View (tube, rainbow, N blue to C red):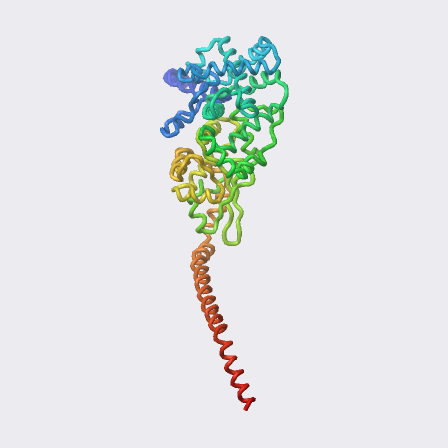
Length: 465
């Protein structure tokens, strides 16, 4: 009887729990989905678009690439020019259009998997999607070549060319790299990666086009050395077989050094970021200098006896800088293989700037160059970029610890606190002392010859007598 009773209880319990097992089954399915890789060309996280000041930074201004914005009526005007440049690429490559299209068509099936499947991407049938990949790919490659070597053939103004360049580095406006490579296999001449590197250098180093030509030329001449420094020491390129997912990822690999370590002992607390604006660093003996490379990950601190030097990558702020950096941040947020170095750089830059005086300090140190306008505009621009962006806890660990250690060193701060007043007093009283000595010397230089004359005259008269 006991055995039967036990069996009944167990059976009853199992039957009672049966409906509740559905949540476990759903969890198992969802966990399985989460293990799948995210698409290589995802959409911008919705939380990023919630920042009103940054909302326009994620959508193309003049040209659509790929499926996400293809049906946008506001971008249709560029379709004709896009087709013309695509035709020119086919003509210059010397390949047969049918053969080139067939090769892209073979890549299209895998290329489609690079995008998120939603209502927009479902609107394309196989033929429409392949045609879009072909025309967009030819357009991108021909635009880059003309932009660098024959800009007069672009058939667009400097302002339009600047907007197209900006659009080519938006996360949602990317084309799979395999499509570009399949088209480029028909092209002869300059090596593929070298051409892309030149294009990325231009985007990283130079101010945006679209302003008056004379003003742009003055800016470039005035800051020629800065631009040269920004484009030097960039990674020499990728292995031909190490292929990025798209153009934005290629840019990211060029300006983020993959060898940077962000490890720190587990359980050890590190500050999330430095809390001090740029103008305050000078008061505590920390000088700010440009990094030797233009990589966003090249942030370091070198201590000295009483202070130190904080090295930060230089940044030229133009009309296209904000969209570029924010889309790199969005890329890092969505990427499975990227460390958040650009995100950390943007957040660190924002923590350095609280007011226009901080912008002025960074400009005077050669860290910032702006074509936007006033220092207040630049400060607002950078703070908008850093809004709701969280610094990676382990990023720049050594730098943050060194700065915090310097700030907490009471002895150093005491010396630095009294260093300026003492130095000022020394200079002040040294000046007064020097002034008094100079006055006495001047007075004696005028009086002594007269006195000597009297003495000599008196002596001569004595001898005469």
